[in-house]
Image (tube, rainbow, N blue to C red; front, side, top):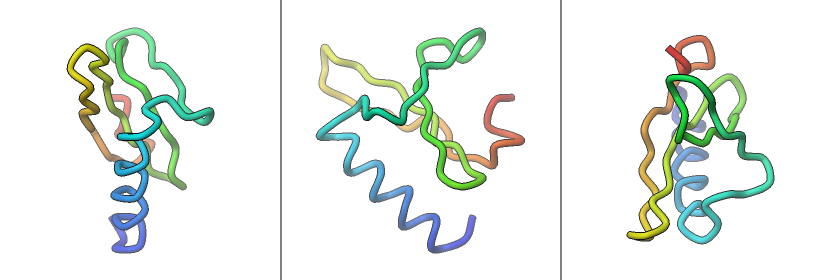
Length: 69
């Protein structure tokens, strides 16, 4: 991952602590059910939210070709 994308991923992760479900988030289906996803250029950030514990867990940050496998 290019360094500038890494900084963007970290910025998105920080924002998720305040708003874990921003407008540009998509809920995943099938084997990825329970995960939410945000697109960042050709990369995808997949994460889950535990509302009871107030936790956002980043599950994957991968190229879109590999993110959903």
